[in-house]
Image (cartoon, rainbow, N blue to C red; front, top):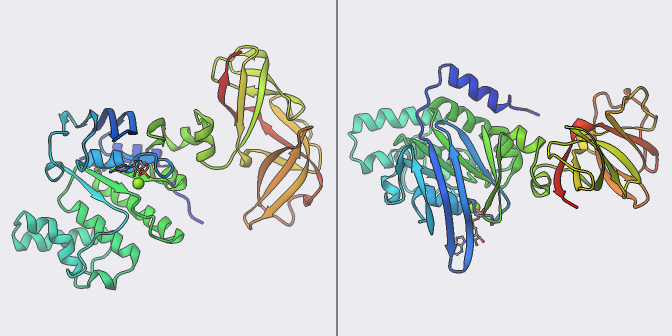
Length: 392
Ligand SMILES: Nc1ncnc2c1ncn2[C@@H]1O[C@H](COP(=O)(O)OP(=O)(O)O)[C@@H](O)[C@H]1O
Ligand SMILES: [Mg+2]
């Protein structure tokens, strides 16, 4: 398994270091789009920084491609504007915008060699042969295909074809590259590999990338920031860390990774950051972290990620009041090598909790936990997050 260093750190390092930021600032202002009676985009406003790797993440049909097509110029918004730096580009046709797009399908010319596919945008501009030769070679090297120029697209793998498409999209040196689910035709392993490459390309050329995906893992692993979309609206914008750790609605918490939800009622405000909440389905009151200025009587929904919950057949000792401890019974468990997923039944309503236990040393670390075992589960109250509040 591989992991990437947090992109935000690399991005900052890059900004301070050798990286030259050449991309445009992209500002989307109050964009609305109707197809007939269908309101596809609802008052979208975004500010994407120069050189940022920005993702639009949301389920299929939420309007990601439509928004990308409006930025590219293939589609006009019903109202609103798109600025590249200080210029409103809505009146400018797609082929005159300093923007290029990589699509899910590679859209290579099958009868042209790889070299000529990449050279195509330069040929249209009647660039001289010598320059074409050098530039195409430079961009084939950038996408790690330096020796494939003479081949035809049919002689390349899916991942290689997508790299050719990326080289072709970059050769005119756009200031913004739009990528619409560019990896979704590839298998999972290759997708991860291509993501690392895409990230390296982004770091090298330093232009603004806007990356569309419905895959939360993809968006979290490469983006500086992510806009989560749902039903034509942007519902949260933040770093991958913020989106995962502090989802602003149950939809976001649910869409980004797996989670548990429990509903409760605030019975006491302990201090600015903590409240006592009664959870009838659990038959317990718990201390919860909160950043929502709760008041007594508020109905709340708490989310807690399965990997943040500890589990044992033995009662945990020495925990202070910041820990929430519950008792339950193992209803199901799924062993998957690096971890086990437990489904724990808790409280009078037999509420199901997911708990993921990472195997550090599976055979020796602790007593095994089996089906139907009575267990304790516990988490630090900082790790729960209130995603919804309804006032009295
Ligand atoms: N040209 C069109 N005419 C009518 N409806 C469209 C058109 N393009 C997209 N839609 C609809 O708009 C919604 C959003 O589509 P799209 O932007 O492709 O979503 P996503 O890329 O997030 O899957 C979908 O319901 C889709 O059917
Ligand atoms: Mg789409």
